[in-house]
Every structure is written in structure tokens, then in C-alpha cells.
Length: 152
Length: 152
DNA sequence: TACATTTGCATCGTGCACGATATAATCGTA
DNA sequence: TACGATTATATCGTGCACGATGCAAATGTA
Image 1 (cartoon, each protein chain N blue to C red):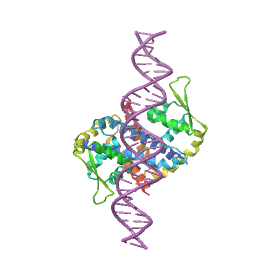
Image 2: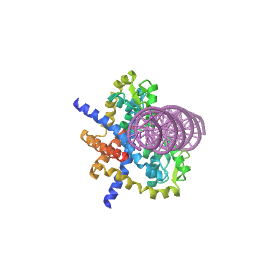
Image 3: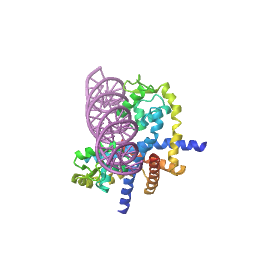
Image 4: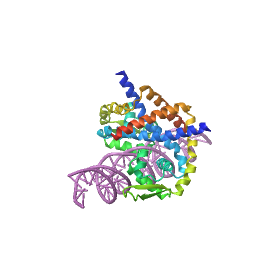
């Protein structure tokens, strides 16, 4: 019973800080992304494409855990900015292939400079690389666990 | 230089999973909160009020790190559901005091049963209480560090 | 007491985020 | 080869989330 309360306490102190920390990190990215006229989700989509170009909407959706109804308008905005192209696959007319345009590749150079600037935000926290590694490990475990839960 | 790359790598693997995990946890709450006709942010506001009733919009804003322009419409929805009341402070006409109504207190009994259900989601991850505690500790450190950064 | 500044809340516009639903293309199978 | 089920994307409606801005009450100061 005492064990239970302990877990309950942890749970209460876990979901909210996750939510708050996530929003704050996006906020920290804000000014740097604004210079590139990008939002954080748009930046994530580009990161995925820089890693592997020509993905379908569905593949991007799986990678970022975002629904297609979130991605469709976001991708249209990236298209209107001239960063990507959206084209129906010839092999499967249902599928839409997303391809980086020249402007989309060009922006990568500037975008790659952002992480170094973000790091300074974490430096004040006095957190060692080792601690962050363990944190990341647990974070991915939670993420994987929940993914599995959602799929079932 | 090698050290730098390591940190860069960590950074890339930190912000995105935070963002994804946060959204997934909210999703896990979804069905339970739907039974109470609440959203996750609305649930958070009620949690704050259950801890301390009669707070101003500003105090709730500080507590949840949400801007007042996010809270105002959210609080109006809670008001229209009859869960809270919004009233201008007599001491300071600028301030709006948020007070729980009977229905707002009544819902607490049901809401307190949710955490136990959420825990089952984490159980599959094979994560010890000790690991979660350390995770929480780092999470709060990151959160505090960024708060301090934002204020300055 | 005047009045510039600050504070607390609200309005507006944009962009996620997602559940519910629609639609067309493809697949599986009788 | 029909045709029901599945798949990929898109549309619609609601609710955050926040930057920019507005406004009235309160505060500080000459």
C-alpha cells in the first residue's frame, strides 16, 4: 500500500513535468527557428527528410508519431514555402511522396547550427553527459512502452 | 571535438523524444478524461485548484507555465461546464479569482482514480521505481534550468 | 495630485494535434 | 473477375499554445 502511494506520487510528478518541459524546449527553439521561418514540428519533418528524402506522408507520420491529418496541412505550408514538393506516387496513387526542393536542402546548413546554441540552455542545469544519457535511455523506454501500448 | 559531437547527438535525441513522449502520455489520459468530459490541460488546472482553491489566473499561469491567453478560454470552458467560477477580485479589479464549484469538487473523487490506471501503461516498460525517480530528478533539473533561462 | 510605467487579463491570428469521418485506390478472397 | 475489407490521404470541428497587441486598474514618482 505504501508502495502504491509512492508510484502514485511519481506518476503525478512525471506526466506534468514532461508536458511542461516539452513545451519549454520548443519555446527555446523558437527564436532560432523563426530566423528560418520554421515552426518546431516543421523543423522535425525536415530533419526526417534530411535523413531520408522522398518519404510518403505515412512514413513521416510513423516516424514522428503524428497523425496524417496533422501532417497534411503542415506539409502544404512547407510546400508553399518552396521547401518540399508533394506528388502522388505513380506506383500507388493513394500515396503522396514528399521530396526536398533545393531551398529545403539549403536550409539544412543553417539548421545544423541550431543544436549547438540549444545546448547552452542545458549547461546551466549542471547536468553531466552521463546523467543525460541515462535520462535519454529511460525516456526512450517510456516512449517505446507507450508506442507498443497504443498499437495493441 | 569528439565531446561536442556527443553532446550534439544527445541533444538531437532528447528534444524530439520529449515532445513525442509528452504527446503520447496525454493520449493515454484521453479515454479516462473523456469519461469526465475533460481535456488534459483542463485536468491540470483542476489539479492545481484542488491543491489550492481561489487562485488568480496569473497564479495558475505561473504554476502550469501556460500563458494567460491560453488559460482564459480554457477557464471559460470549465466555467460553462459549471466546474469553476470566475470573479473579479474586489481587492484588485485587474485580477480574476478562480474558485471550484461543487461539481468541480465532486469530479475530484473520480479523477483521483485515474493515476492508478495510467500506471499500468508504464508497467510494461520494465522500469524500476528507482529508475523513474532518477528520471524525474533529471527532468525537474532540466525544467528548472529552462525556467530560469526564460525568466532572464 | 498628475502621469508614465507596470500589471493582469483578454482579444486576435496562426499553427499544431487529434478524433471522427470521407474518399479513392489497392488488396484479398470467394 | 466481382466485391468487401484495408490502406493512404484528406476534410472538418474542437481545443490547445503562443506571439503580438489592447485595455483598464494599480503603482511609482516627480
